[in-house]
Amino acid sequence: LQVNPFGTWAKSKLETHPELAEELKEHLVSIGKYVQARDIVNFLNWPDMQTKHNISESIHISTAQHWMHALKFRWVKNHKGQYVDGHERADVVQFRQEVFLP
Image 1 (cartoon, helix red, strand yellow):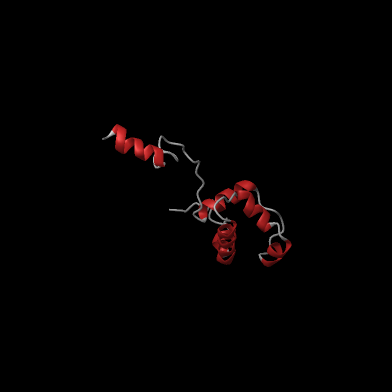
Image 2: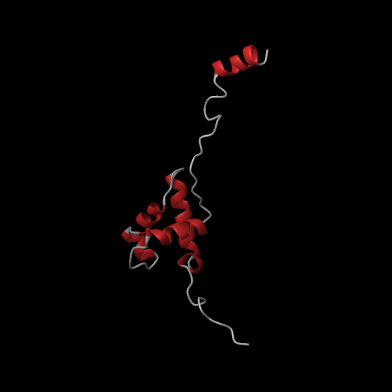
């Protein structure tokens, strides 16, 4: 039975160059809490990074999003629930202890 080679010849640059993946992780961690895929694009547009990793063109933003997913970075939207920044205030705690549940 013949095997279909479709899709086996294309590898991600992160898979073939683990040192690039490590540098990207370090850079994203150094940025802090709020990282974006645009940060990867900007990082790889630096001339020294392009020469070091043999990159001739800028990567697309969707490629950077895929790479963030591959590097285990996730983005979430903060959900504002019922108890966001209010259930531990001093006046709320006092009301709960003295009036609501005496």
